[in-house]
Image (spheres, rainbow, N blue to C red):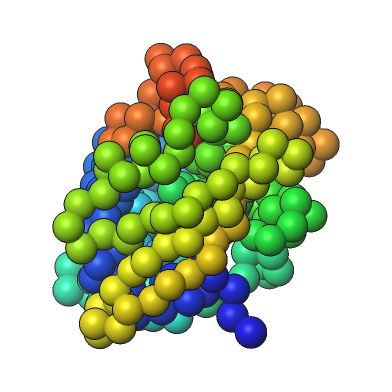
Length: 254
């Protein structure tokens, strides 16, 4: 049986690119470049690359990128977009819980809840971080965004998501947040690129900064810096607060 995140992204590439949360690509890639000091020799792995928006932008800027995703249909859309722009990007279908890479990349990005933290258990989410750590070279960097566990303690997640939803986007309903597990359970209604309507039961894990720090330190990251994630404007100047729906993590391996 398919998990909700597999169902969600099936035949959803065109609609996905129109979602409000996918509109910040250029500003986000600006930070990635800055973090690797604009070194074009840097090989980059994009985990949960989706329709390839970050991979494509980074390839345009001259970087060698490998984009991986679980969704065959999103990867198909990514390959079509790259080919239209004559870009050579390696797109591969992989499950982030089981990656073949070992000490290959100087930078790994995992943005917009790409794989982590969508898994159904904490152990699976940890496995994704472990595989990212394994794929990094020494002194390599992992940059990811994830759901900020401080946000639901002070705000209604449903009100926040409703305020960001535009016509044609996925709509969220009957949302609950479990304080014991820091998991959000919700029903999402979408219409895919083929016009099929779907109702999905979603389950996402929110993390607090101390958890992320502990998990990454366990995996031999020597520095773990956490900031607020502002759409299209990732920056080390944004101190994380309970007002941030997502947090930006920049971690450097030993």
